[in-house]
Amino acid sequence: MKKALITGITGQDGAYLSQFLLGKGYEVYGALRRSEEMNISRLKFLGIDSQIKFVPFELADIINIYKTIDRVQPDEIYNLAAQTSIRIAFEEPGYTTDINGIAVLRLLEAIRSINPKIKFFQASTGDMFGKVQVMPQNEGTPLNPLNPYATAKALGHWTTANYREAYEIFACSGILFDHDSPLRIHQSVPGMISNAVAGIKMGVQDKLILGNIEFSRDLGYAGEYVEAMWLMLQQDKPDDYVIATGETHTVREFIEAAFNSVGVKLEWSGKGLDEKGIDPKTGKIRVALELRFPSVNPASAAALVRSHSGATKPAQGDYSKAKKILGWEPKVTYKELFKIMVEHDLKHASNKELRD
Image 1 (cartoon, rainbow, N blue to C red):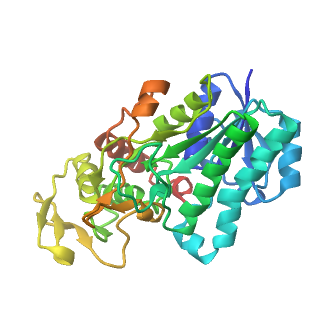
Image 2: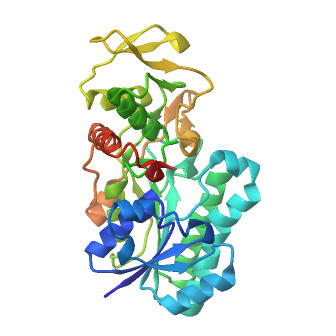
Image 3: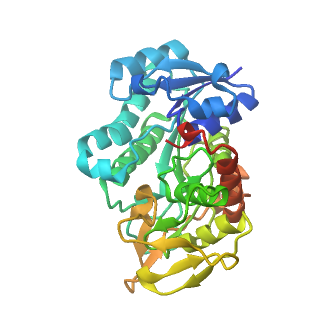
């Protein structure tokens, strides 16, 4: 039985990855910070919390990292933990750099010292590409991060590559573009959309309010992205892979997909901030725009790039390498994703723990 140690196990990706690995017969160890000890609602929702062996783990504490890895002796380590808030990244760039960047160094140093045969996965992000000239982005696209979150992630990404080359550690980075699911925090824009549509359907909410809905995103389903993480560590040679859908869609399309999933075909009226999304059957305004509301997940704000002409374009991942070598490709479309999310919110509206 293989052993896997997962940091960030209480999050969306950690929960789905745990479920996936347990299905593969793994013994799964969940690395928990002290503040996360009671926050295992996602694991409980999937019905797997009793199958996880939780261990205390602090990414800022090198001694704790060494002791835990030495005691568990995992075959694979998946580093999914991160400080993901762009707002906090600007307010606390030192902390963000420590957790998202330097902690990767601590983990890899521990692997090098304790057992160099441990395989390591680093969750990198498409936000590292930042302001680029190449569309779409692949593994060879230069990184140009635009905020402390993405900069710290780039540090972790290159540290992973360095340990792979310098010490021949089986270390891979998955350059993950935006992905969502019913288990994502409700502050994400897809989560806000899904939650609002469910609330409107149940009659407990009047409308969805957002900002600019013309931003585009490459958005996939987290439940299938975790398979790509595992596949990277099963190859003969370690490498980095872009994991994305290869498609971009606007927030407007996301909104329409969510409403369509409950039988509402919106009609749009007005321009700019005066534009409204109207339910033609009832004549009620179901979508309104206000500048103070977000238009994209803050962690995706850096994913807007500029072409040579200066026009803003959305980030778009090229997953062809993952398809060719890993045999992985996305199957869930954005329309299917929103159907899954809205149905979940309608069914579990009272379980706010999952989305906090």
